[in-house]
Length: 193
Ligand code: 5GP
Image (tube, rainbow, N blue to C red):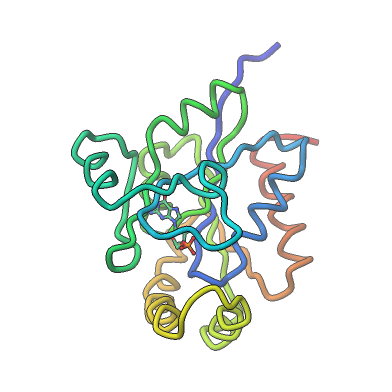
């Protein structure tokens, strides 16, 4: 049998683009053999989120200690005082299980991972129909205050401009189509039938 060659799948997009839905869909496809890279964050957990599954929820102090000890593969202050980062141990943990890693990560972090593992990473940008549509989706989600929504929208245009640096752009105008396309892309990258 061929040795296991661990791959990395980065899904990046502005908040509200639907990348989390796409990532969850891919994780549910057993044949793709994917495992979610659980990021560490200093933001508070939303009601339904589980520590260790959605994120490792840690204090700002602990986050900064991890930066100091060089524990992160990449980290970002995505929003003011909200830090997010990928612990180096995540990739080891997942590859040790002979699974491929999938990331739901911001654009800067996503491009950093691609740069660190250029030959093993497929970096995908998920493009929303428009910034207005993003606003509608974020409002519907009802997980953030208006102030936080505005902060995310303000960032979206900057993030959209990074799309050409990714290996591929998936347009999430119709979710069903985007899910199929994402599945195909991962499958092709893994050279599965
Ligand atoms: P949320 O607060 O909505 O869960 O995530 C906010 C943003 O941070 C999203 O774009 C999410 O993908 C990104 N993010 C999550 N984990 C990481 C990470 O480990 N590193 C970086 N750079 N961004 C992350």
